[in-house]
Length: 305
Image (cartoon, rainbow, N blue to C red; front, side, top):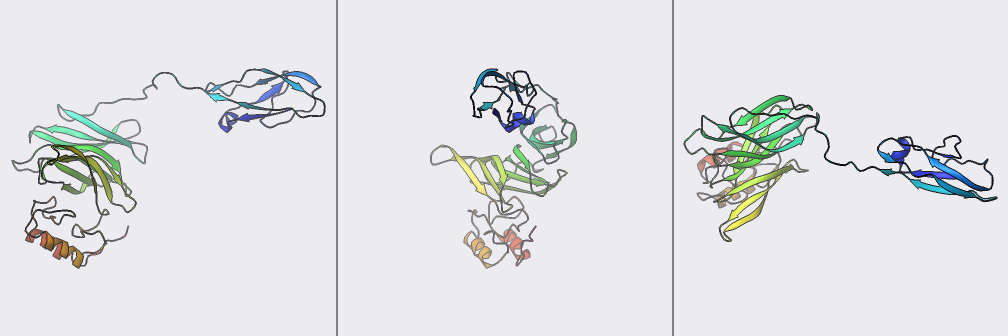
């Protein structure tokens, strides 16, 4: 008699078989010293995670090897899983968390926004915790200091290939519309490395961001459409992290193609790819300030990581 047990996970957990109360056998073992007739086959428990197959009578014939295949079924947990830990995090009287992701060290990165009493608006709030939810560091990213500053909301954050973090959300402090897509890139300790706001004339915001294989970023969000008087899906792709802001076509060098694109937008509101790069978050107009950045980075090539 030969019995084959599956799956391998149950075998690894201790699943075995035996005949007539004899010695336990592993899967695919053969027992040869049984007489012709009916015999009782039973199966060993593989732990609480598995249902044990029922005992069964098996007939052995003369000159033949009786084979049996038996499948252990894994139990399906009932109810909600138990809570391992929970924590409250806050620095003012009003914080909201928008998303959380696990990081490479087993901890977590959480992003949302916090109310700023000094500016009377919301700022992006980024929190890094260890695997037990204890805070390792936290940072806020305020908007501009002038009277036009508004709410800045972080909706999604994740770790990047260099160990830092990318935040996607919306800003009312920068950009050209009522609200614009807002990207903030930080180092592994949450210190801001760069920020970028972009969109059209009315209202755009990001819900998610993903680093791409070329080290750029793909953003998904929502855009208000004046033509349909409703909201549409919004997506945008950036060049690789570390590329000059004047490398408009993402070819790795600031050259004549980039100057030609700037010339097409000269003294106008920018289109895409946008030549409005000065100040860092743009001012809604392509002019000498933007040309100054292009001239400074002329022939600058992207350094490969």
